[in-house]
Length: 261
Image (tube, rainbow, N blue to C red):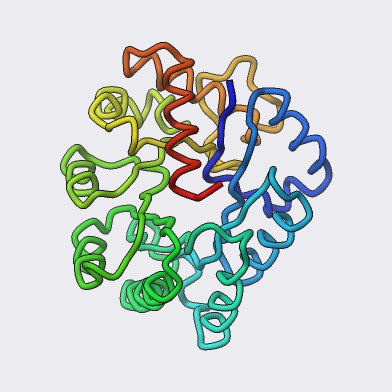
């Protein structure tokens, strides 16, 4: 079984003490490749550096998360436009809207989102998107770019059936994380994932966040890492009524086609 983690925040400081061991454990558990998420200007630069240092194993995205939209300026825009020229950067993002936290004002989030969509339209690379509690505005911004964008994945999907249908109707992909395994808030996903076509479904850990609550025994540090991707795909296969090898092979093929890896 070969897996691809399409969303791992490996630039997070918690990975610095044992980064090589994290990669080794991932590979030992069947994770053949990982896409390192760029979620800020310095984070995107670091994601590219990691991908350059570990070619074939790691790839990168370049973007600014809506939490950091308040920091988006012309220098940031220029940096992202430079970074996406690298062959190691496979998508623009993480970008989008997050009204759940509103760490950046909503109007500022929308402006930063639009500027990154312009970058994606210019370079033609896929989009790695985030949406939480902002679906109407998210869809409205995306609609304004109809016909100008390439492939799209809404990563770490946690939403409703209506949101999922909107994404699928638009031709987009969906990324599933360990949120699926959370009995407090993710149980609705266990039915929804059955409805996602195999060629639109990808898997991710979003590590170090979202350690699957069904992992036993739980690590004392409670840090999620790519090695747990296998656990997520096993849960996903069960919910879809598929053999785990089928679910894994389909998700890997879809990810390779989406990111061109």
